[in-house]
Amino acid sequence: MKLGDYRIEIIPDTEFRLDGGAMFGVVPRVIWERVCPPDELNRIRLQMNCLFIETPTEKILIETGIGEKWSEKETKRYGIFRQKPFSQTLKEITGYEPEEITIVVNTHLHFDHAGGNTTNSGQWKTDSGQWTIVPQFPNARYFVSKSEFEQAENPHERHRASYLRENWACLVESGQLELKPDDYEVVEGLTMETVRGHSETMQCVRLNRGGQMLYSFADLIPTRHHLPLAWVMGYDLYPVETLEAKKRLLPQAVQENWLCFFYHDLDSPLCRLAEVDGKLKAVKVETEDLCQQF
Image (cartoon, rainbow, N blue to C red; front, side, top):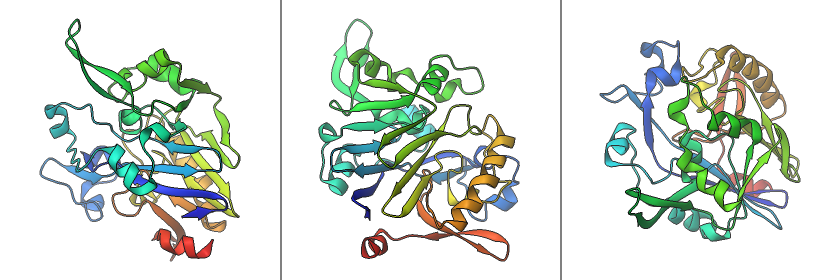
């Protein structure tokens, strides 16, 4: 689809699963299971939807999914159901190879957002008994906020398991990782803004182009099922601040008819919002419809 002179594509990584109780926090299972039926392990199905943005001068990837460096045990734990490599999906949808990506942006460095930053090289390090990890996008500049990087390098017990240094360490060594302010512009019209809630330093994405606003909520509102104000993840470090951010952003999204992007939504990552009988409803947007509009 096109927003002005920018081309936008959604690149799904792979289905995976997380505990439904953790994903919906204080909301009772008897309520959330109506919209997200859990499996026998109480896990719900999720996706990781990355954004590809092509400008006249850049090929940008926002988020890189969960990556492919997982052991068999970890794959089973997270219910990772990978049908094809991310690089293949990227090529099929955009026509570009990983080597052609010029900028990679991470909203934060949790493993399900930054896992695809790097990949196994296929070379075994005999001294450490591990695979050599290399950048998956060897010619790209990688952007993350300095505040988030410092959190990732020095995590506390509450979110330590979400940060895996293998997803960024080799980027530091190669000089590809660029640390940015809490709020910054990637290219004209594409800005990152830190929104406290899920964590202290996670960022959301604003793309203002062609008279349209596309807003990616990252993990602030991970799926369209998290639109009700009280439906806040148990993973959030600052749930009250997540609630306040939702109260601020969602009315604006309705009033200004934003394109709303939900990173973890399995079926409908791109929606517009409508208020129906006092409740917010997500209306799926077909990319073909947008192509006809613009």
